[in-house]
Picture (cartoon, rainbow, N blue to C red):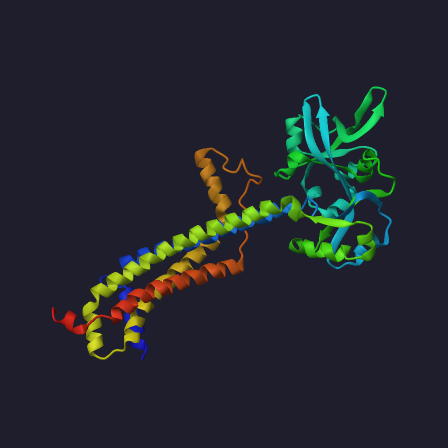
Length: 412
């Protein structure tokens, strides 16, 4: 019984003159395809930027730190037990201090981080982004690694000597003066993020000595968890210890230092996604207008079908079939376009830059378009587009069932 309305839906979908797609159906398909493709491209690129930002920033900054207000010994049982914790990938002692770096070209406020170079590759991605020198040249007595932006602003090269000023004061015959240290630049890193202008790395023992910690003491234990977005629970599980609580240990996570940045990215992605979803909705209005015109043009046919006692649900199915054909074709074509164009955005961008003779991404922290296809996200786009198509097809289909044969056929 459903064969007749479905076959009529296919018939109305085609042009009467050519037997192919009707002009209005083609316009509707093109509009929906462009909307779906744009949505997939934009959200996939934003996913890529988000992941790249996670790698470039969260891959370097401390993700989870266990600390207390005073220096503590690294030779403790609870630190050794971190090696057996399955939720922890790696850990190492970590110190940090706000400093001033100075040479003949100026002075810059920086954050000095004390690390163990042999452990750093297990904790962060920074060793992979050193563009000059080597982290292996870092010694407990001397040697710092700076960001490329700092190197450019103060005209610093490998082997140059810099002066470090800390907040620690020492008494001299001339009064209290900041503690200073002369160090040599043994490496330059480039993450193309804000860390290039604010972070300086030195050996943990050198920073501990600068801060006047006892030998074998540290400021904190930096931890790389196996779940970046579950660091708070991991932190609580570590300090949920009677000894650690009594000694005043606590933890901090990347949420305190960079959480607002990633919340802003998530909010921006949701807003842009909503705006483009609205574009898809507007494209679906083409389907609505197309079916409304079809119903109007086929009033006589509908009246004849009703006089032949075709059920209203079957008449409705004719136009729902036509709308779904347009919607499914548009969604499939748009999805294919989105999946094909997204990996080739760099080539398209290179072509545009060749024409305009301008580097579009110079102002950003990476010089290419990263992308990441989220399957759940793509299924949501397809499902939403299909639901809107079905809704906009149902409205004129219901209108077709309200046509009165007597009023229509009276003028035929």
